[in-house]
Image 1: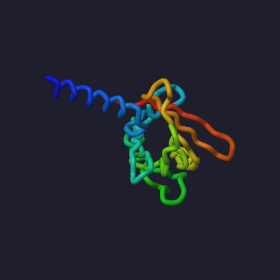
Image 2: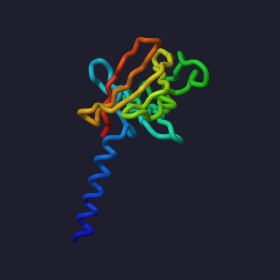
Image 3: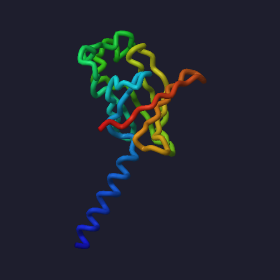
Image 4: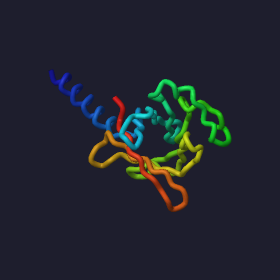
Length: 140
């Protein structure tokens, strides 16, 4: 009986720790709150990356990043690695970049979990001193 109790407590702690991670699948929404895509955030080496896991509108799933430059030029948006090279710094992940597939523009970025709700992720893209922050929700 004691073993079962320890096992249950261990799994509960693991689930709480996991829910406070930036890793996982996140819903990217538009201004109206409709989910446009699912972004998967994962670890590669000691850095954090993100890719477009799924585009919700079936007719957009074959869309290419025609406005992107360099290695992302004409790459399918679904499956594209759009967030690169973030490193943990306290409660934030910083020092990386994110690409907007609609405009092809690349921004410096940082991400962090909302301190009141670990199922909310904040993504901030920077250009010079200007920035825009988006909110993603953890996907089921």
